[in-house]
Image (cartoon, rainbow, N blue to C red; front, side, top):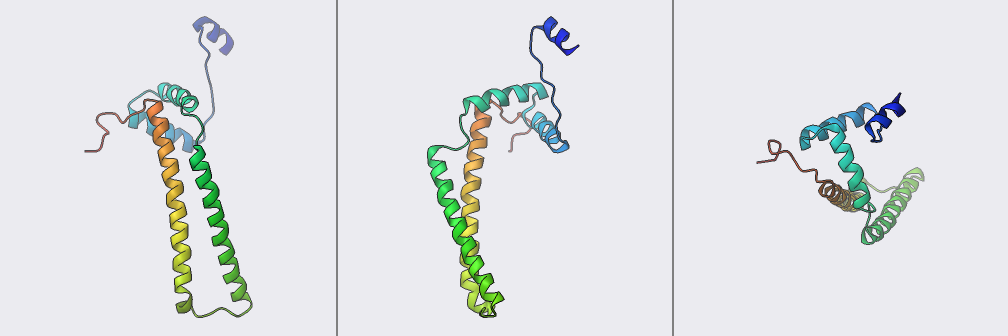
Amino acid sequence: MAGAAAGRRGKPRLRTELSTADEQRLLDAVVLFGLPKAEVVRRLIRASVQAGPALSAENTEAVVALAQQVRMVGRNLSQVLKAIHRGKAVDMEDTEAIWRGLHEAIAAIDGELTEMTVAYGSKLRRQAKLTLSTDERPA
């Protein structure tokens, strides 16, 4: 039947199953942008091709550098855990600077990755011409 209906209309159709979470995201986008579901999906499909790869060459280099930092943090944590297991760990007061440094490194990595993904999401929405509906814009 779907083939016959598509033949009459002359336009291809898409039927897909969504998880509950994805359906909610789609419904949120419908409300946020004030567009029908089909139009949100059409614009996202067009924009995903026009926007290009998710990471620029510069962002790819940044991700490689961040991965190296994550490995360094992991090695530091591994060394601390080995010392604890050997009974050679020092008092928590003496390790505060180490933990603070690890926390700062992790926060910086998280911040950079968030910045990259938010920037790409903004680029994708601009390409899709998905802007906030006038009644949903922040004051």
